[in-house]
Structure formats: structure tokens, C-alpha cells
Length: 330
Image (cartoon, rainbow, N blue to C red):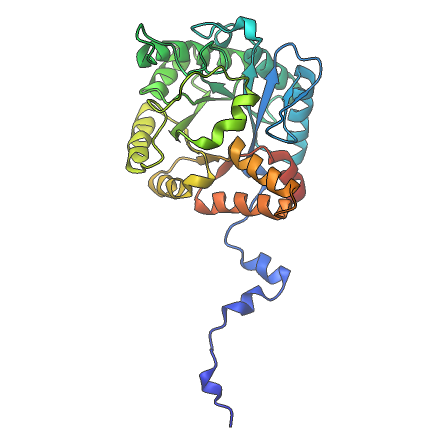
């Protein structure tokens, strides 16, 4: 005689039986509005320049950037984070192109706003690394160290010219102490209380930034360990979080995303402001490279990583796949 009582009464597999069942009970859902598209624009480019370390990503011309922005709008993407790459000859010790109203980033902001208006949040990178000859995120002192407070003065001016160009959101990414407060004051002083700050709250000194260095034609000498966070630490991120919120951050970010999902979760549990995470260049390139080798299913891997980032607590995700994935979800 069969002992029916020996079989399980609770069978979680019942909720996995069909695609429709799995969709209905899914706890985490991706939506096109979750995504922000990072984009690079190269000064003087006559055609898009492929980034060899990031297959499918380019340094845009002004025209191709406008097209990419329009495509993002059509796909339902929420924002575009702009990085300007000036001509090498224009880089100097203080990052002059970053505060020149006619610098490539400010020109790109005006271009994209003219193309899409308010249909896409135009976000801009407040950092000196793309515009400075030594490639660090700030100006150097006489001993060759990054000077925190002198850098803050440059960030304040950068935020003002970016706001004047039309940025909806500025993203200070240099990890200087006090950067959010100084930028908030600088924006308010010119009557731009409406411009939001997306704080790079927990930006780690990561090995996964490598392909990005090509994307922005970085001139970096040395490393950024004295200002970006140590990958070993998480309590430090919560301290940075408290400071950014006190200084007026409207949104906060963890970067990179994948290796720091625990940090994303801790930050998301601690705040009542939107939390973003940046799926960075190395995360992108690993999947593209493995897929090109036939080692993984590209589309499934992309969706799985993005779902994991959102499941950890990120409301918004910066990803180079933003428009592609938004189209598929739409």
C-alpha cells in the first residue's frame, strides 16, 4: 500500500509550472523606466569610434549621440548619463574643458536637451578625470596628491556650467569629501534648485573599470585608492551614505553593481531616497566576451544580472544595455 502521507503537501514547484505562472508570481520585475544609459561623446569625431574593450559601445559624435538619445526615449529609458571626451590637446592640470561652457560635455548636454527636451533625464558626470592631463579625479597639490578642497572648487564650477547647459541631474563621481554639499550650494547660488544630485555614494576602487579607461581616453597615472573606497569595506559606505544625505543628495548610487550587491542591499534598506547602481564597463565586457566565445547565453545572462541588481534593491540601473533591454521589455 502506498503511504501517501510520506509525500510532501507543500510543493513550491507548483508555482513554477508554466511561463505564465512564473511571470505572475515573479517578485522582481524589470521595466524600461528602471534604466539609465551611459554614453560617451568624443570631441571632433566625424563618425562613431568603436570601443574595442566594449563590443557594441562607441564614442559618439554629436549627431550619433542625439540619435542614441532619441532611441532611448523611444524605448522608454528614463535617463542618459553623459561623459565628454575632449581633444587630448585641451587637457590640462585643472581640467579646463570641464568648466568651459563650450567644452564637449556642455555642448553634448545642450545637443541632447535640444533633441529630446524633457522626455529623457539628461544626467552629466561631475568629475575631472576625462579633462585633466594626469587622469585623476581632482587637481593635485605640490606633492602630487589629489587636493580634496581645491577639487571641490572645480566641481562647484563644473556643476554650474552643466546646469546652465541644461542638465536635469548632475552626478559627482570623484569621491571627494564634501562634494555633494559644495555642489548643492553652488547650484542653489545660481538659482538652479531644480537640478537634482545623483551622488556616487559608494564608488569602489575596482578592477572592473578597465574598459571605461579606453572609453574616456583616460590619462591616469597611478591609482585612485586614496579616494575611491576599499573593496573590503561596507560600513564605510554607510558612513558615506549618511554624509551624502546630510549634504543634500537626492539620489544615491553604488558602483560597481555586480560585485557589490550586498552594499546595494544595505544602502537600499537604510534610505528613503531612490537608489541606483552602475553596471560598469568590466561587467558589460565580461558578458559580451564570454558570449562571443559561446560560453554563456548572452541575452539570459544580461537579464539575470540586471534582475539581480534590482532584486538587491536598486530602483534604477545604469547599464550599457539600457536601450536594448528596454526594447525587449517593452
